[in-house]
Length: 116
Image 1 (cartoon, rainbow, N blue to C red):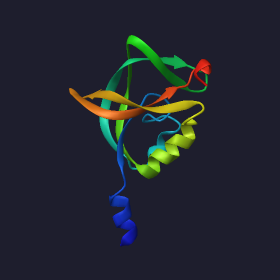
Image 2: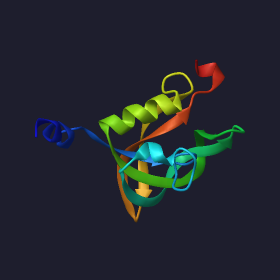
Image 3: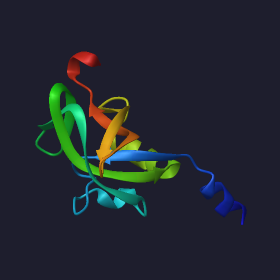
């Protein structure tokens, strides 16, 4: 019983994914039973192709299409490791436009070499 209570009290995040974590992509299983909220976009970013995976970088007047999910703390930790949070990608706050709503969420932004 105690284990269930801890799971229920975990912090939740709304995660925007745009590449290998999307449905039918190779790393989607990392999201486990996360709740799918729908297709969406984020503004002020552009998607770049880095051969094995995409990244996003800040770019005014651009948008990126993707999917939004509600994830728990455990899933976020797994995604942090997968994304190389802190050295390859950084987790940043973002407005996600889903189903004509604006949701406060997070996304993994590529860290440019000159930012390291």
